[in-house]
Every structure is written in C-alpha cells, then in structure tokens.
Length: 344
Image (cartoon, rainbow, N blue to C red; front, top):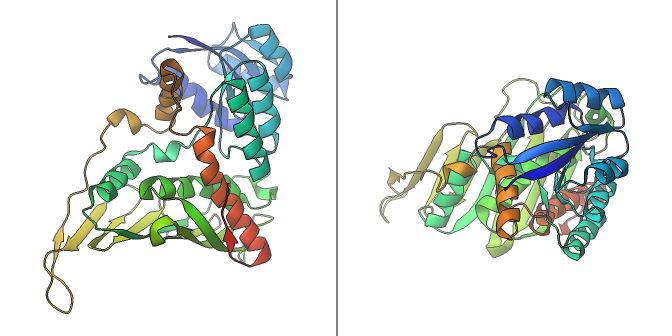
C-alpha cells in the first residue's frame, strides 16, 4: 500500500524524518512526499531541493497545501506550541497524523487531540523513537520473563551538556518537556506499569545556558508499588551518559545495569543462604522482533502497518498521553514543590 504525505515543519528535525522515509527498508517506498510546509518558504524550498522533491507542493499555509494535495498522511514536525493546531488541521482534512514528541504542549491539549482523533476515525501517533531501540526492547523482555523477580524500581541517570541554541534555550521546562518524555515513556513501557503520582524538583544549575529548568530530579510512583527514579540534566559538562540514559533496574531476585549503549549486566540470586546471597549472571534476551529496533524508521513502519491493518499503533495518542501525563505531572509538582497524583 502506498501513502501520499505532507510534512509540516521543515527545520532541523525534518531531515531525520525525510531520511528515514527515503532510505529505510522498513518504510520500503510506501510513502510519497507530495507537500512540504513551513512558515519560512525558503526553508521548505531548501529541504525539497535537498531530498529531490521537485514535484512536491511547497507552501507556508498548511490548510492550503492539504487542500491542494489531498494526502493520506500528515507528518507533524513543528515546534510543540503549534502541535494542537497542526494536528487538528490534519485530522479535519481526513489525514492520519504522526507527530514529533511531545504529543501536545499541555495535558489539556493532549486530551483534546485524543478525542478529536477518535471522532475523526483517524490515527494520531507520536514519534517515541527511543522505545524502538534494541536495549529498551531487551530490558522489557527480561522484566517480562520474571528473571529479576517482581519489579521494585527503575532508576536512571541522564546527564548531557547539550548546546542546541534556538528555541530550547529560551523555553520553560526544556529538559522535562522536550527530552525527559523519551525516558519517561521508556520507563513506563519497560515496566508495563501505570504512572500514579510524582514528586519533582526542577532546577537551573550554575553555568546553565538555558533560561529555565535545565535539570530535574523526579520520583514516580507506578502501579504495583514500583518506583521510577529519574535524575537528569541537559547542562552537565563532562562524564556524560548515553542519550538513552544509564539504568539500574531492580527486582526481588536481582538487578540489571545498562549503560544506555551496548553494555548489559544482569545478576540474580543463586541460592537462599548467606549474609549476602551468591549471585549468578542472567542472560538478557535479544529483542523479539528486529524490525522494532531501528528507532525512527521503526516508528514510521509501525504507523504505516497499523493503518494498513486497521489497528492502533504502539505509540497511538490514546496510549502516549500516559507518558505526557508523567511530564506535566512532574512540571506541576516542580512548580508547587509537592507530590502530584497523575490522572488522565
């Protein structure tokens, strides 16, 4: 099945989208880009030239380009503050929509988009590409296998000195809203639990080049008495972690340590005697499906497959709003310096 698509937002992020569409065997030539939209016409024209999209309609007004091209899909790569209006426009034109994260700029907007997509009978999904990597899939399989026993906590460190420039330097809550959504979504996915409450302390450390909120510490309460501890900073110079964070996942029988890259170390108790129990190494299973380990390309393929088969994709907005609720729960907690219950 072939799909016609318009891409809105031709800034830096769009290059990764168009590369995955053009080059990934998972997408397999199933998408034709028939339109590009950006508030700056020259930016859209330059992106079209870069990817050889000479037949695509180029414009600055999304409604007009959608009317002209009548696509099946809208790829939403705009800044978060414009998300709701862009998704609403795509749904109104009968498009299935795949958005950059976060899925909305507020929890209220997120709930509205879930309702709008359901009423339109169209899919609105979110690019949570970091859950589509081998490490996250392997850890989820290990937890589900029961090798670690009953899950008790997930603990992660994210420390990167990221000098983006642009809108992130000026926005509020840049770490929590623009980056931690990946980590929170991965934690929720791996644990298979429901987020119930959070306490968060957000800071802007000395030397930060962000106007606000370059770092945060959060404690999440998940269902079944599972705790998720998050420590993060986007202005931490030196000794950086992986972009996927460094993880310690603890169960009643053992612990898994993952560096966010290729190193896994899982050890479980070997017997039930001694002051400190003897340990043995546990194998970390390979992903069940290699097609789900290619990041952005896997998200795109999952989105297309879901449309073709009439099911909801893994990152459908009706599921992803739970990760969004974690982010805005943490932001609300940080503002009020109090524990906040998470409810959709």
